[in-house]
Length: 356
Image 1 (cartoon, helix red, strand yellow):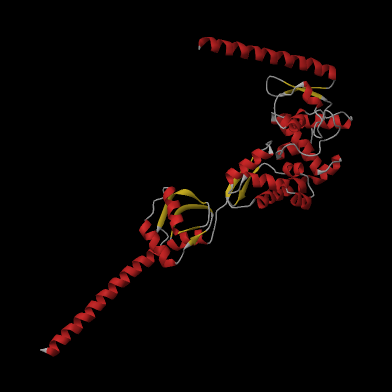
Image 2 (cartoon, helix red, strand yellow):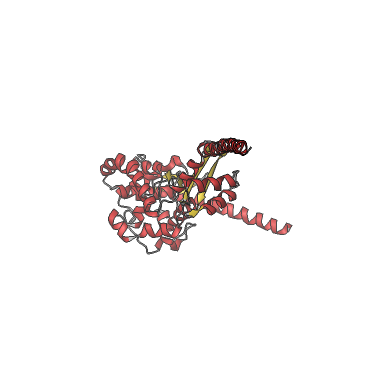
């Protein structure tokens, strides 16, 4: 009887072990397949995830929750522990479709970022440029301004602050979100070199000017031209003035000297400043803004004409004239139109006040 009891217990033990192994292998296989499955965690719609700092698993889970991502937190934590991923890098990550746990954790842990589009607009100020860059990258606007003014950096480039900013060519750039200020500016300079210096340096020399001179003139045209079609006309007008040794008399340079864009007063034109082209001959010392490529091209290839003067018109453009006498006539028309608009505005405001 004792021998029979031992035999049965051994058999049952073997069966039990077999069942345990099958169950274990089943669970192991199931979990392993989840680790390697390309659909372990799904992102049905493209999702941008920003990690503001290097973080741990808790920080990553918290970030996913704040983004409203649909994921199994228990499985997520289990996979992280099993795979050994503990720290995750700051950056921008674009997630779409499905990932295995190995893929998702390694992406964040190794900092395999996805670039972002950085848009630079034409005709902006340094402050607006810095604020725009800071809103699109993980950098401080003050750091951008400091980089544009860094004496060592400017010395290496052999550029002034204004010349450097003039080269911040408007475009949509692909950059990593964690790009630092210097690298971001160098990225833009590389594009400027490819898009402006290489194709147009010979043309600039043909005109008798440097690339920076061209950019300086283009920056004036950028602020002056409301209509794209007028860019080559305005460019030609300013080149005509320089050829005749006239003062450039470009209102945008006075605005730059004053530090604000507004309607100018008579006293503003006498403001003593290196950039005021009403009191200084020739081009100002540098660009007053960052001109677009189309404006630079219009400056390099101006329309050939004999215009020397221009005045704004009600349509948002300009009336161009060859003589000062013609200019006076058109200026008077503009003055009368403006007075009429001010009068209409005052009458409307008075009527609105009366109805309150």
